[in-house]
Amino acid sequence: MTEYRRCFRQPDTIYATCEDDRASTDIDLEMDQLDEDAGHRVSADVLALWGSKGTVGKLWDVLEVWCRHAHTTVTGRSLNAGHHLPEEQPDEVLNELNIFFDA
Image 1 (tube, rainbow, N blue to C red):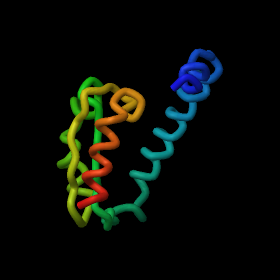
Image 2 (image 1 turned 30 degrees about the vertical axis):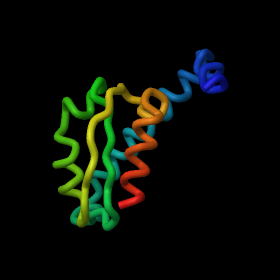
Image 3 (image 1 turned 120 degrees about the horizontal axis):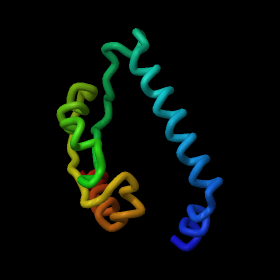
Image 4 (image 1 turned 90 degrees about the horizontal axis):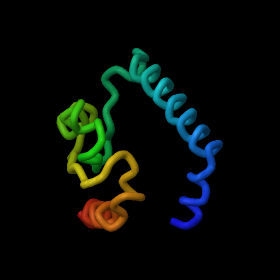
């Protein structure tokens, strides 16, 4: 966490991270529009975690959306966090991963 905090005190790090997020969002949206992706579904079990303080759960029914994109079991829940779940709730994320992979 010390190194993480050190890096994220640097304006250039914050700028680069935001630019990376914007670029990946644009690419994801473009990929979602491709005809070749139509009808393809995830064949592995899915664990979906999102932050209750963020916008994801407010904009979508996360589990319902993932159920439409997966052939198998979809589980998950919101955690008391914003956007950065591992940084904000590391113990909860680890617990959820352990439960998921032990199943």
